[in-house]
Image 1 (cartoon, one colour):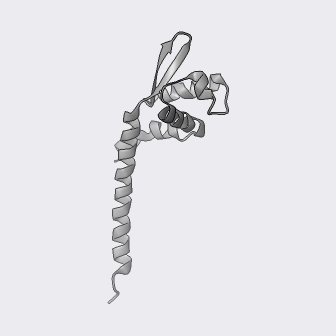
Image 2: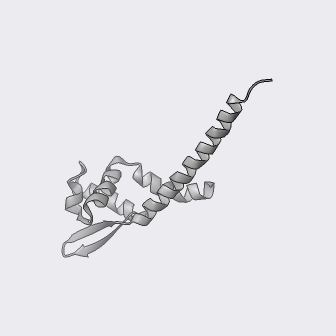
Image 3: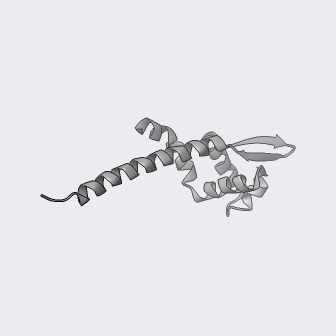
Length: 110
């Protein structure tokens, strides 16, 4: 699992920033958006928003294309689905560990 965790670290690191998370939510809810539209949901300059978007693109969460002078950003759902599966696996492991602990604690003392 540590190899999987190592592979997922950049994705979770990117999502750990509140502004980048707002960008991802915006793109998920509103669909493809220009850089200008993205800056409406985060309190940063256009240049800072572009840096956030480029980092999200580097980890595979978004892609972009040029339309005239604007760059249009689109969410890539596969990395989010993989992150969700990974978190579900972790959750199941914790549930099993807690069940074992509960069984141990509730075991009658003889």
